[in-house]
Length: 142
Image (cartoon, rainbow, N blue to C red; front, side):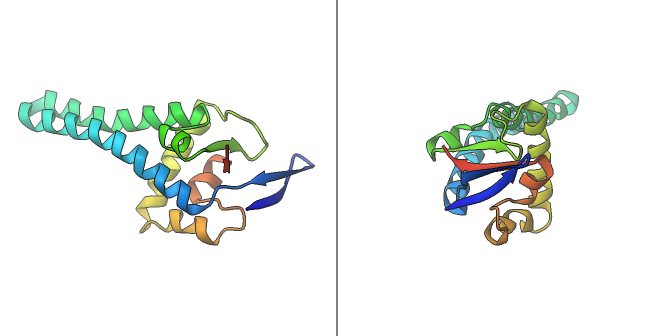
């Protein structure tokens, strides 16, 4: 679906990604992060104590670093598989690690409110979820 959007007083035609490819990319990335997190979680339960707590915290840190890094570079492995990428609302590509981390925080907010931030993609004219609006990003076909 091509959408005309004004970016810094210039009209750009963006080929916005739909909800389907975005969902599949989230599932792929969730699986990757989930496997790593599960290993760390299992190790933390096995070890217990203070070191176990550190391993549990590392699970959250892995997720933050994974998404900040890949969003910052424009594509996660799931996005690459689905041939979509992340651009800034000002047309910048890649968006950088700061926006990548901000988008990850936005994903937590989008999920925390009964997934409404993700459902928003279906009703928003620019196919943006709350996390996209928070970080100032669009997901487009690569």
